[in-house]
Image (cartoon, rainbow, N blue to C red; front, side):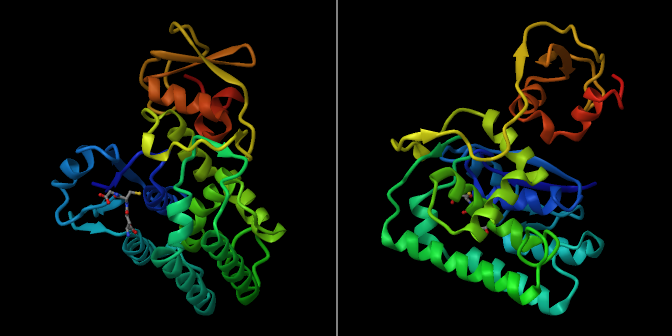
Length: 294
Ligand SMILES: N[C@@H](CCC(=O)N[C@@H](CS)C(=O)NCC(=O)O)C(=O)O
């Protein structure tokens, strides 16, 4: 038995991203179950997780339902102390908790004007004054956290922590809407875009279901400002260097091409999430380097 996590569309559900990062970025195994936002799928799925109404919702291995991302963070932190979701130093932990709580409760102008959409990046979204005020507040609390904890890493409180998880979708919004922030905040955003778990989630979000109309905006677009993916493409057929999927070990049914070489997977989603960002997937890169055979 392991944890179950209900998530929404990976390309759009900022709270689901937080929920999933609390597992993936800290090495805690989880099984996800997914439902489309803005359809009956999510309320119908959540009928199996009473009294939850939103994604993410966690079910513990013993069966307790835990909605609310902040509660999920606290539960995982106390059940898995070795995973270090919060900083070990009590003073640094206090800072990390304060920031996470403020993110969980606030920044509504930014959240409403710039809903997270990992599939596009716009050149400008004409941020109104209340969004600029949220950005100024972010820069204030980020600088405070770095100073108060003496962080020497790209992260707010030393090692990557649950506080950084709570701001990962904010980083995606700064990147996605080209929001005006200073150099310290831009460096923090860049660290998120390159963070391995974030890259995996975004790779899945790029190929996970159709575009959602709710998130469509007419602003001019630019390339995503994160790491540029290796140029992989999906191809027909099942001929590949490996006979077994690098993720499941099952027989190959779907294939991609990278630098003239062909690699196979056991389903379209695993192939397509790898095409979206090959370097995000350690088992695939091990296969490419010849460290793992199919
Ligand atoms: N406070 C909640 C917010 C969760 C939330 O609003 N999730 C959205 C998806 S990003 C949702 O489930 N929306 C569906 C709805 O509200 O009906 C948390 O921290 O988990």
